[in-house]
Length: 158
Length: 169
Image 1 (tube, one colour):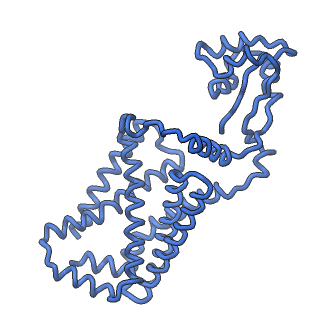
Image 2 (cartoon, one colour):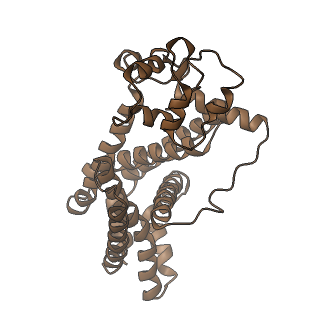
Image 3 (cartoon, chains in turn red, cyan):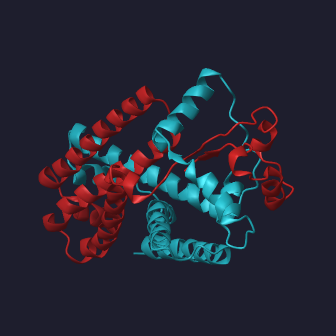
C-alpha cells in the first residue's frame, strides 16, 4: 500500500537527519527537499496491515479471489467430463460455470480499465445484464435444443 | 519512499533502535482505503485533463507481456462468442441442426473446415493452457524469470499442438 512518509528533523530525540541521509545512500528522497522548509516534527502516515486494523476490514475481496480460482479448476474438470459424459447432467453445470467464469473475468477487465464511480457502476450493471442473458440463453439452448455438449459434437462431426 | 521503509527494515542498518522507534512511534493508520486512494488519483487526473503517459507505445514488448494480453484477449473473445451464441439461441427462429445444415450446404473445402476448426480451438486451448499457468502462479510457483519464459514456451507449444490435434478429430 502507499506509504507516505515525510521526513523532518526530529528535534526532540536528537536524530541526526544527515545520518539517515547517508544511510539511504546518494539517491535523493522526496522528503529531503522539504527539510529546509519544514523543520518541525512530522508524522508518518502509513497503511498498517496489523491485525487490529485488518480485523475491521471486509474479506469479500479475498473470498472472491478464492472463488474465482475454485471455479477455474472446476471448469477445467468439466472439459473431460463433457467429453466422456455428454448430456444435460454436464450441459447445465457447464452453462453455469462458463457464464460465471466469463462474468467474473470480464468484471476484472472492467476493474482494470474503467475509472470513475458512475462509469464503474454503469459498466458493472451492463455486464450483469449481459451475463444474465448469456446464462439464460445457454439454459434455453440446453432445454429447447440439442444442448452444449451435443452442439459441439455435431459441429465437429463435419 | 519505499526505499526509506526498506532501508529501515533491513537488519544490517546501523541506525540505532531508538531512532527507528521514533519514526515508528508517529505512524498512524491512514483514514482512507486503497480503493478511495485509487479513485482520488483517477478523479484528480481526469479533472486536470492530464494526458496518459506513453506506456505500451514505448515499452519494449516481451513474451510474458504478449502472452498475458493474449490470455485476456482470448478470454474476452471467447466470452463474447459465448454471449453471441446465447443471444442467437434466444432470438433466432430455427433450431441448431437447422443452422448447422445451412452451413454444411455452403460446402466449404476440407482444408477450410480444418482451418476453421483450428481457429475455433486455438483460443480455447491457449486460454486453458495459460490459465493453468496462472493457477500455478497462484500457488506461488514459477515466478523466477527463466521459469516464466519456460512455462510460456510450454503453453504456446501445447496450445498449438492440441489445437492441431482437435482440428484433426
